[in-house]
Amino acid sequence: MKRNKWGAMGLASLLLASLLGGCSSGKSASDTSTNAGNAANAEEKVTLRFSWWGGEDRHAATLAAIEAYKQVEPSVTIEAEYQGFDGYEQKIKTQLAGKTSADIMQLDLPWLQELTKKGDFFVDLKAQPEFDASGFDQGFLDNYGMYDGKLAAVPTGVNTYCLIINKSLADKLNVDSAAQWTWDSLLEAGKQLHAQDSSKYLLLTDHAALRQDMVTMLKQCTGKQWVQEDYTLGFSKEDAAASFDWLYQAMQAGVYQPLGESDLFFGKIDQNPKWINQEIPIAPSMSSILPSLKTVLPEGTEVITALPVIAKDAKDSGVLVRPSQLFAVSNDSAHKTEAVKFLSWFMNDPGAAAILGDVRSVPPVKASQEAAVTAGKIDAAITNAVELGLSHAGLVDNAVANNSEVQKIMDDIVQKVSYGKSNAEQAADELIASLTSKLKDLQDRE
Image (cartoon, rainbow, N blue to C red; front, side, top):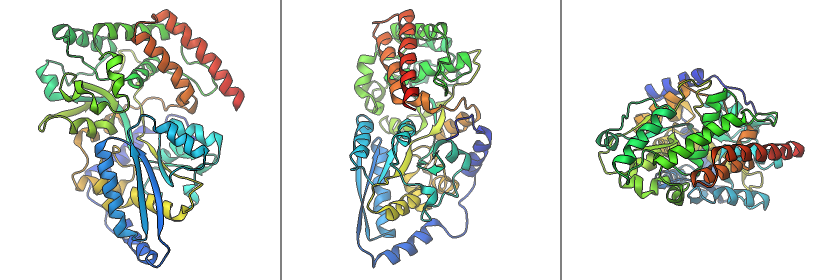
């Protein structure tokens, strides 16, 4: 897997130019799939399991696409296994270890990076003639799907970390929805809002979003990965202490909703009553979450997107652009060929794209983008977020920084600071000591 900073502007041109065009002409993926489906009528009936996480919008669209596939491959039944994010990672890892995983599964990038080191769990899609990868940007596949020369998974969409803003509410609260926030200006605006009305907070969050903010601060401060590929730290104690001090001030001032309240909705922030009842105007999140956050607001509410917070003197933007998720086919599937055929249809077919729209952010295949745009299924706010993210993309996260054990260390310390159980100096010392020990352990396992 390549972990260098990829050509964001080149990929931006490919993705965003296609969003402005019409549907491509010529023979569609559905033509080929339909012919395959006619031939399959005479074949033995096959049942496949398809596993994913998401919100209600994603569930509904994915189920509708599965239903449409019955017309393409009548002999294939897709059993849907879907849920919220919480608990999904552990379920997938347990199933893979026990050889009971779904045939097709949605994965998060850090899990794939770890799992490909532990075993040969996934079909090499590059070696499967049934899978059409021609519509994907090759650089995107190389950076996020290729491991040891194998295409272990494909991106479900192009996703970027952004600010999702309830503009209608922001305007009502006199919060500048057009601002390019710095950490200082965000802290000041959040203080003012909460001081005026203690039921209001500027930012919707959970511990994962706070971890992302701390990591972003460190990248912006140093211009380096916070954890580097050689298993060393990319920041100093002073860098970490400054970040944790900002977090402590922000939590004390009511910039963020208290973590004890917000973490009740970890992985399902669209269900947070503070967002639904319009008491928080801004949600720092991945662009793919926007449909779920927008659906729960009153009809007519204007929701826009903006760049995430960037420090005034940032050495790197820290703007995260990555796959929304990834799709892989299990090597333990009893029906690999049919599973690969379904995944190829799901990613490439214009009819599928028109159903799925932007529930996994902007589709990574050009023809699918065009079909979704023509069908009116891509929200302009998501297009804006991806365009901004691609044109301001920061360092690409490496596999070590994405390791779940490494991230858990930051999660734990972020929570201590948020609850006032650790000050900035203590938190910085603990972070460095814990990471140094964990990174040595991970390196020894290599």
